[in-house]
Image (cartoon, each protein chain N blue to C red):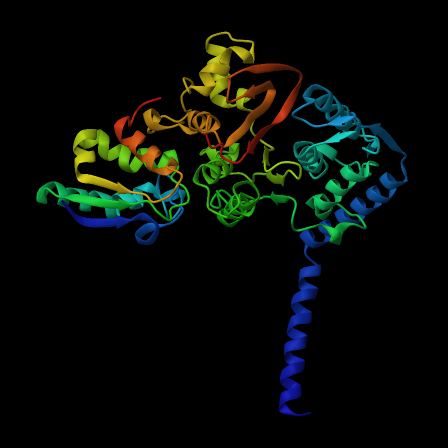
Length: 340
Length: 110
């Protein structure tokens, strides 16, 4: 045996010994047992019948908030009870980017589907189907359209990051520049748009929470409208409940406030101060800043939906919802400058 | 008279963010302590202006502004700060410039 072969054999045996030692550890055995159990559960779950949930005709969280929230809370309840759910959106007549973002966020959230399985279909209406396929929806589900996603229609950025990566700069820059050409006829790093996107990313619950660093999850979606020069942006933060955050809860308890609507004005003008004592006087300016941006003439609409409130930032008008929305959705639309 | 220049995008970062050192490498604390404070003190002594160039900066978050320019304004007063700091922005959207000036004028406004 040559010296080279002997050396190679020695390396091989070293690797084998390490691997065999690893396989004898309790942690390894436990993980194998759990994997087996998990796959068994999955096979059993797949054999269960899928419950068909027909979606509301107007599949838009912004325009049909109550029905949509009811639809998703029903799905959540069924999934929690161990049923498999089929999201049937075959017969929908209207579809918006915020509706798609809600659907994709829900079916990718393990807290939402638990141990059950979700399935679904595409709209029958060819225009809506085209919009659905062109979106990056299929990148995040198992489907034959997985690789057919277009690069020209939507942006999704899904994050599970640690607290040190607060803002995904590259995603934010891309989302900001990519569609300015559609609306403003030329690509430019639109400052107010970047500010809004970055503020949204920066102020998700776990980022703003300095006591406990956790993973966070959000979705950003941009959709240039084909029939106009407008571009819609949806930011779905899957953790923040503004009216249920610690500081707001404390405020509500102190003043015995049971209705969230009583807090809307305080929240927008940030009378409710930051929960942190350090530099408290200069903290918490991001919501007033958003309100200021929402009044720019290049913004067509700006809404926040959280808990049981839907707030129009531009007018300050709020609408009380019938059910509770457990996440926070920010939706805004940019439009070309009106030249007078 | 302008005798010194700070180009935030090239001298520091094009996306400054965060309040403290623990928030990242581009925090206000770093900007304030390594660049702004010393240059401003020199400008006060020499009685000249510093030109602060905002072009190329993507985002000036409230935490960054309030704790850099806002801090300076709280310490020295907004008039003094505006006398010694001159801001340049050639961007067609004045958002960033307005944010900085607002912060200096009302550092603790809500």
